[in-house]
Length: 161
Image 1 (cartoon, rainbow, N blue to C red):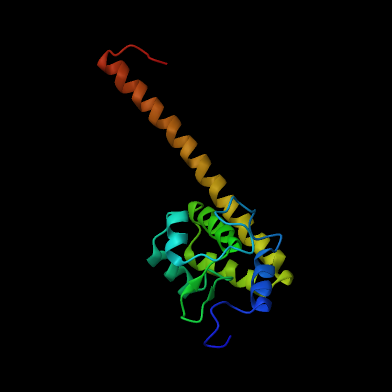
Image 2 (cartoon, rainbow, N blue to C red):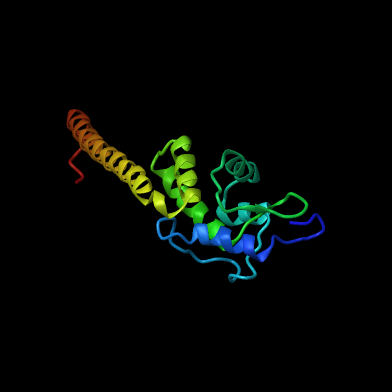
C-alpha cells in the first residue's frame, strides 16, 4: 500500500476477509456497520467489545488478530470479520485456553484450509477441559450443599429446600 493511501487495497481486504470467513473461524454476530462500511478504529472496537485498547493492541502484537490490517498511518483497522474473530477469541478465553494456544489457533487460521484437523484437535481439547471443569464444579456445588445443610442442621436452622 502506498504511503498516501488511506485504505488498504481491495485485494488485501478480500484476502484478509477470505481468511476470516473460513468455516471454522467464528459465527457472524450483529455488527454496528454493514459490510463494505465496516472500518473501525481500535477505540471503536474497544467500546463495542468491552476490551481495552491496550488489550487489542497486545492481541495484534502477539499474533492473535490474523485479519487486522493497518492504515497508511499505521493505525489498526478492524472490519466486521475482526469483530467476529474477537467474539470467538472471547469464547476461547472463557474456556481458560492458554494465550499461547489461542495464538497457535490464529496461526493455523492464517495458514488456511489445510489446517482444519489441527484446529479441530485444539478445540476438542478445549471442550474436554471445559467439560471436566463443569463436572468438577458440579461436584463442588454438591459438596458445598452438603456442608451447608450440615451446618444448618447443627445450627438448628430449618431446611429451606
